[in-house]
Length: 182
Picture 1 (cartoon, rainbow, N blue to C red):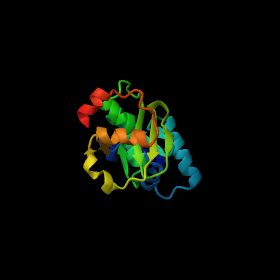
Picture 2: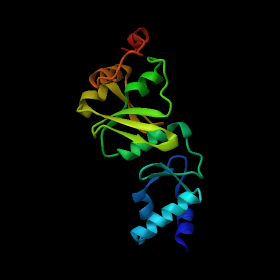
Picture 3: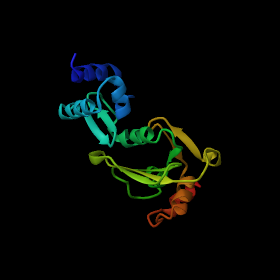
Picture 4: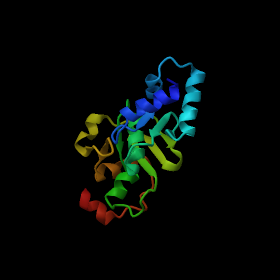
């Protein structure tokens, strides 16, 4: 069987609403034994045929499943930094809680034990990781797991402290609303 047909068949069987993002490592494991050149050509054909859609460097979306469009950036962030301590914070949390009036469009902000970095996800938006030295133990009482996003989520109080510690502007914060959460 041709590799593109084999890839298509395997993705049709593996992918679902929960598992629709695949890294290059995942894809190479699906079709083992390919040379580097052949694998790159296979991924190129899969993109051209609409089988795979690039989300960001090294991460692809299998577009033939009903995926949660509003959560792609969060799910991508969870996959990209799976080996780091990350939690949703800053403008993402404050906007969701109504503490800031502006809603970040196609932009998610997370605190991470990894380095600070902005990941460009093309048409999907951006993922902004802000480095933190905080340990998991120091923030446990102030975070909850968000199963929809597949990430930890900061409380409003922690998000405000993170905003201050990372020297981000607090001009848009509605302090009356913020004090309701603190």
